[in-house]
Length: 165
Image (cartoon, rainbow, N blue to C red; front, side):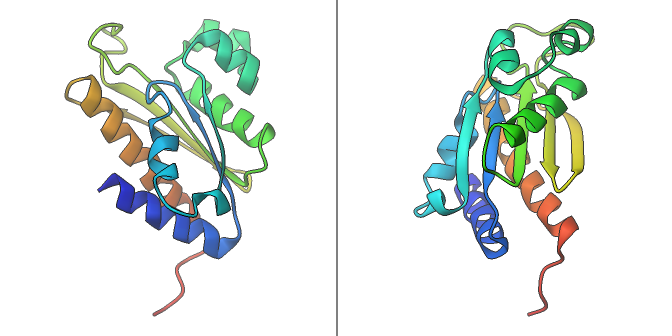
C-alpha cells in the first residue's frame, strides 16, 4: 500500500516538475527506501537525510541547538526546522520531515511512545501535524511513512488542484 502511495507521489511531483527531499529520524530512512523502490524515482526524489541523533539534526539540517533544548527532538519546532533544513541543503522544492518515538522505550507521559511529528514545506507553505500512532516499533514506522507520503500529496494538491478528467 505504501509503495502505491509513493508511486502517486512520484506521478504528482513529476507532473509538476518538482523534486522531493526527506528528513527522517524515527523512520530511519524508511521513507526514502519506500520512494526508491519506485522505478524512475531519481526523476523526482533528490535526497534523504537520516538524522537519528540530535547532533545530526543540528549538523546536517541546521536545527538550532536552542530548539532541541527548549522543545526536544520530538516537537513541532524540530520537525519544522528539519523540513526547512532539507529544503536549504537540497535541490528539492518540497520536503518532508518526521521525528518521533517509535518505541518500545523512550516515551514520557508528555510524549508517549508513538508520538510522531511531521512537517512538509513547499513554496513558503508549512504544514505540521502530530500523530499518536499505536502499535509496535515497526507499525509506528510503517504508519509514519504512510502519513508522510500522504502529506506530500495533500500539500501538492493544496497548491495546484488536480486537472479535471
